[in-house]
Length: 277
Image (cartoon, rainbow, N blue to C red; front, top):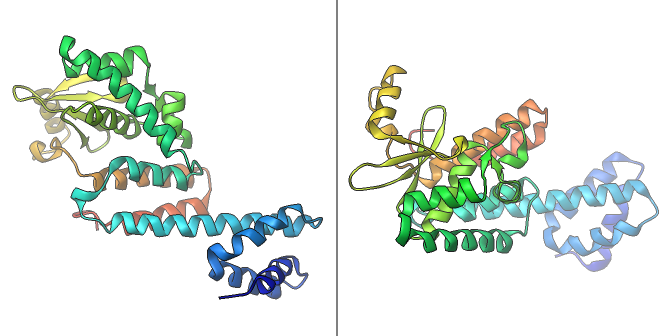
């Protein structure tokens, strides 16, 4: 455990003209972890712009390291214990939207309340459609826009990629006590509203368009998929998060944000999914 004086001295060495010394100080502060944070924050007012910049960059590295530790603990859980909302919020924090858990939960609670109020009158499937797609006007977003992949900004902008909108549908539906799940189609992601007579597959990216099982089975068979029953079954939370991380990797790679892409790949590697390793 380093003393306050040692930590303060290490922070000052971040701006040393000898890169080797600066790198040694960086590594030592990184190992110090949370203990170094107050001293790095104090450097924000330092007159040397190089020290200010390196202090901010190191704080971000410490944030991401702590966040990855939370991700590791999360993915080590049994599938039954994994919470989709928690996983989505960890991904959002990876993208820079941290500390919005309360705001997101309150919004989803309010939307689910509107759905519950309508269920006795028009049924769950129609209530979900009217609240999310008619009233709140959730719509398909841009695949290349990172905001349309992360839950907080998807809720704020009402725009998202298919799997992000499906996550909204699932999180609202489960709060309302409805039988909703995710379905990992080969090149698209749908939400499933399970009904005893005829399951409904909701394309949240296409204004909540509803497919029936037979129509999707025929579509998949035309594409060469033989075991349509397995493809159209509810998928696990791990599969959803694996798919989300793959989408993010493509976004960052296209934007040439290699460091973000590499971190996303590492998170995906930590998320062991049966049949995907």
